[in-house]
Amino acid sequence: MAAIIERDNAQSFDGIPGERVSIRIYGSQIDNRFSMLESVAAPGCAAPLHTHAEDELFYVIAGTPTFRLGEQVRDVSPGSIVFIPAGTPHSWINKTSSELRMLAIFAPGGVEHLFTRIAGIPLDQIATLASEYGTAVVGPPMDLG
Image 1: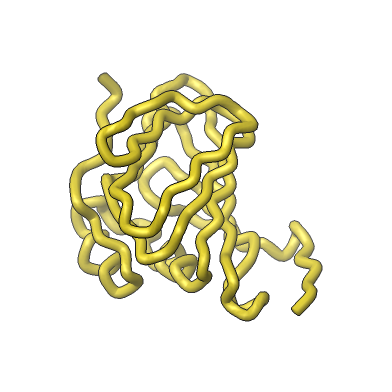
Image 2: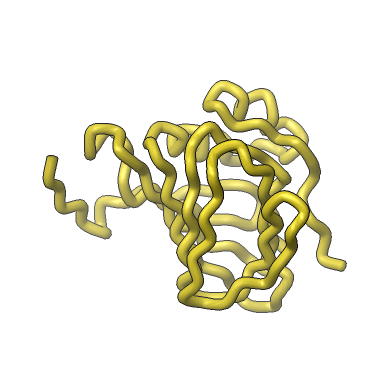
């Protein structure tokens, strides 16, 4: 199914502490083939170590996030793509003093609905909710050190 989804139609809301998320494409808009979120993360913002039932791909638009993929930790520059196969433990952090902007694409779609529900929930309470969407929190966020 073909689709054109205008930027003005994206809802923006709080994600994890320090992050603004906009769902750019809901899976339901394209036969659940994938979904796409835009993330704007403040300095110090960090996702907990987690896994998804879906493959995930990040495209770094601006900033230099630090990603953890399994045991590998690496700073990633703008224009880079980070591919995370389903089930891979991963996390990211914005260790810089500048805002970070990324696109996250999940295949198949569906997990995007988790992000609409975590707004305002402390990180230590996200695990139970995340499990409803095939996401497992398996460790804390990376630290700034």
